[in-house]
Length: 154
Image (tube, rainbow, N blue to C red; front, side):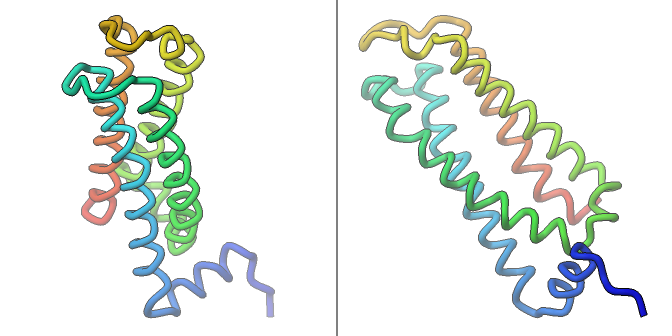
């Protein structure tokens, strides 16, 4: 008798439990709420939808919560992935979700690396480049969320 690989053991544990998959799903969704909610609030401020508060203060307040949310969503997502990794790897919605996640991370890294946020003074108009990053961020994160929901249906 062959010993199960760690991935097979995880899949067996997840699929053999009546509560582990739904619990991981809820934790994954709550994690992404913490990722996307603060990011979208910050992006809307960059876009000028709201003018309340200093952008740098808002960044210091909201962006750490997004990192906490990602730290919650990632392990839960790995548990969900472990339930049927072979099927997920061929699922176009899952693959698109991963691509959009990478693009969202690259977009955020490019914005922060540009130094544009540090250069913003209170009360000044946000330049075009950060606004473009903000618009792309909203579109990418909404795409991640939509693709995540579509995984079950395609």
